[in-house]
Length: 101
Image 1: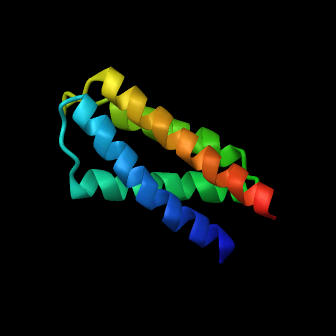
Image 2: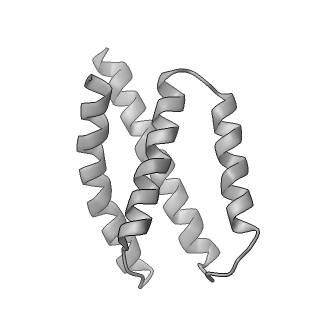
Image 3: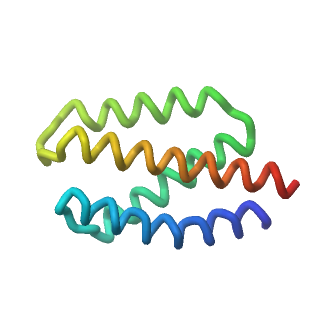
């Protein structure tokens, strides 16, 4: 239950942070991108909490596979920045949960 609380509160902060990132790159925040980000960060957080490092390799492979077909013309800087911020947020969740337990 405590992990869920950390995640939910963190995601509210992440929403604000990603709003700023999208404005910095002159993009708009869509509901589908928000939901996809929540799902990705949730997956990463669960992987870290249950200590399953193979999941990180799986996640990385999925991210690369989705970028192979570059139809949506998202810039690499935007993609990299968003992913780095997302991973740093999840690491923050994990560190907070480790500190509190």
